[in-house]
Structure formats: structure tokens, C-alpha cells
Length: 335
Image (cartoon, rainbow, N blue to C red; front, side, top):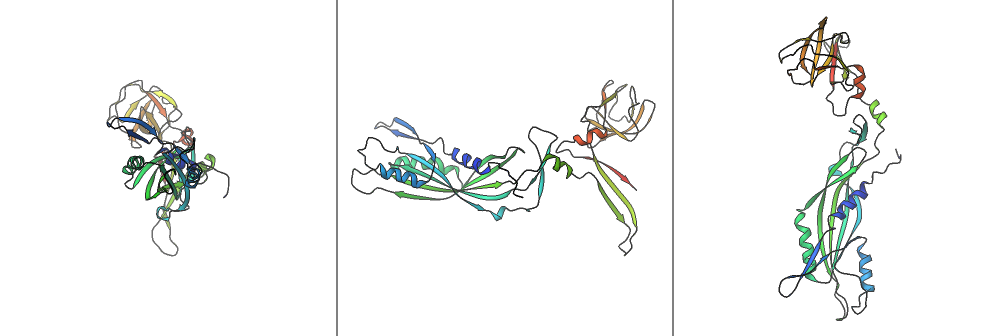
């Protein structure tokens, strides 16, 4: 606990939220109804009070410089735990490291938190305010979903609902005719994000993988039961990750052919798995270069293969290379 980690999840969510309102424009029309000018509304990160103070300092319309309106600002205002989205705190899941197909990391389930935001809109004309509001509200019914890359190392991308909570309006037009008027609308949002803890080391995650399962069956429930049957299961690779070509087909085989002729069977033992194209085949026994097989193993489709096709042998060297997401073929023995 308390080891250093920083996924930048809060920062990413803040940036994603701000990007929603970064392209809003308003238009002014002339007396003929033609577009006179188009203004892109600037957006900044900061508290509302900062911009209100700036307006009060530059309230005189006769001053040569003043804060430009319309303008928008947004601020991250709070963080609250969301128990309605809670999952088991000790539950973990395995995730694949981005860019490394065989690297697996252990990650605890994320913790749900609600991020509170305020979007403040400042204008001096009521029509400008209505234009901005109408470009925002139709997208929130009442939520708009953002897709955010939360954790780069494991490629964790989640949809974050942004819910509109309420809208407040304020008109600061007070004083004489030389005093500048400002309209202020404040929209409050809640972003339902997730916070991830430290991502486990690849080597530690690999050690936590189940490599062997043993189940004992007993005959009755007496005080001294007798174990009748033990079933042991160990994971194995279902394809040749090392591309271990040991021989070639001596002739064509069809979908119903179980007796296969190969050029050289010296590297193939009995009770092993071979792969021809994408079909997994179990070698039950062999006589010379003739293999007696069971076709279409490990949920692969039985297919026809032409003479000369490469025969790959699955060995123990393939097991450590099992990819994340492999359905794991299981080799069961009964004693």
C-alpha cells in the first residue's frame, strides 16, 4: 500500500470535459439578416470569481481595454465517492500490457468517483447567451458520454457519463448607463469516472496465474470418506507460438481423414498435439511415418490440407508464451 503511482486519470477527465466546449461560436447578423461576424467563444480554466473580479475592475465602458465578452470558464470543484457503482474491493483482473502481447499485469477493480464541474458563461448580450446555451443543452439528456483513456499501460478505455445537474442565471446589470452589463450562466455537471490503483508488475501477475488444478471426488460424506477419484488439470498451449515445424504432410488429407502420412515422424511422439494450418490435431499413436489422430481439437475446425503443408509440434516451450485471452487447452489426467 502507498507505493507511488500516477495514472493522470483526474487530469485526463478534466481535459476531456473542457474539450467539449472548446469550439462554440456565436454569430451576429446585420439589419438584412446576413452574418456580420462570427466569434469563437474563448474557454479558460479558472474559478468564476476570478472573471467576475476582472469585470468589476474593468466595468467602465469608456476604458480603452476591458475583458472581452462573451467568454467561458470551467472549473473542477469537487470529488465524491459513488457507492452505487461499487464492486468488490478485493477483486482483481488480468490486463494485457499495451504493445507486449505476452505481458500480463494484475490490476485491482477501479473505485467509482463523481467529479463535479462548473461551466460559467459570461456575455453582455442576452442573444449571445441564448446562442451558447442552445449549442450545449441538446447534447445532455441529461448525460453525454465521453470515451477516456484512463490507464495507458494496460489500454484501459472507459465511457464516462457527464450528467448535467442544474443551471443558474445571474444578471449583474447595476448602476448607471456607463456601467458595463454582464450576464452569467452557471451550469453544473457531474462526471462519473473511475480511479485505478497501482498496476501490478508483469512477473508478479504471471506467478499468480493458476497453473494446475486438482479436484478429488469422494464416494460418501461419512467421517472417514475414501477418495475414489482425483482429476488433475494443467493449462497448455493450444497453438505453436514458436512455429516449431517438424515435418510436412506426405499427401493430401480430407476432413474425415484420421490416418495421416508425414515425411518424417521422428520428432513426433504419441499423445502430443500438432497443428496443420489452423487445425489442432491430437496424435493418439504412430507407426513409422503414419499418424493415427483425432481431428479438430481445442475448438478448431476440421479442414482439408494439401500435401507439403507444414506440421507444427506444440511443446512445453509454447506454454510460457500463451497469449492473454487464450482459452487455454486443458490436459486432464485421471488417477
